[in-house]
Image (cartoon, rainbow, N blue to C red; front, side, top):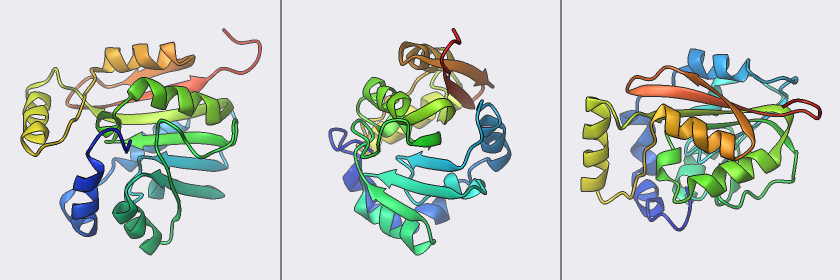
Length: 196
């Protein structure tokens, strides 16, 4: 989560209960997104990953959580995950240092999606993939979710699948949309040299 957003305090307060009340990540869909990578995936970063629910779907050599909430990272660490405290808009990772990034149910909490996706493009290796799971505000359930989060004092900014695909394209990532219902997934592939 981005420190500019204001949602960090909320997640720090609910960190110990988060996994009890949050729906499980759809591991099959996340794994399907990972198959979009055009390289072997050995290192995955779960950006704004909270307790690490999403990255636990993957059996790879190295997986870790990046989040700005110390409370959420404490929960991820207690589950045996490696953790890095950091802002999604200024990832504390080297350029071209990961094969995949997952952002599950979190992009809407980050204050600057454009800066986040630019950072994701920077840290991905060529042929790597970002897998983003989000909620569609154009659906009835999505509209209720937007209202509910705003009533809780969150500053969530949701994107339709097409809006998110355009943001990925603007970040020089090749978007692939899966589903357009209430919850959906968009994968973004970092081009390898010579591809357009």
